[in-house]
Amino acid sequence: MDKLVDDNLVVGLRQSVKQIEKNNVSKAIVAKDTDSYILEPFKLLCEDKNIEITYVETKKELGKMCKLDVDAAIAVYKKN
Image (cartoon, rainbow, N blue to C red):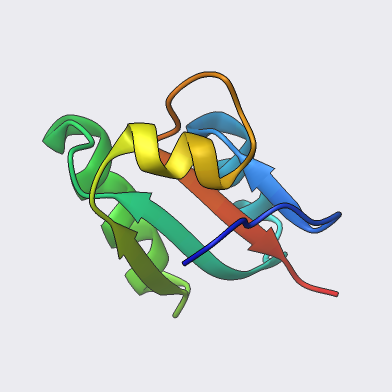
C-alpha cells in the first residue's frame, strides 16, 4: 500500500467507531501492532457490520501512509 490520503479517509479509533456506528464505512485499515484491548473490540465491531479489514504491519507505517507525523492504529474509508 502507498499513500491513503483522500477526502473519505478518517483516522483514529474514536472517529472511526463513530463512522462505523453511522453505517458510513466501506473499509478499515488496522496496524497489526495495535494493542489487543483496542484491536479485538474493533475487529468484532467490523465483523458485526460486515466491514472488510486490511492490515498493515505497524502503527508507524499506517501513520506515514495517512501522511501523518504520528503513528496511527486505525483508519477507515467513509462510503461515497
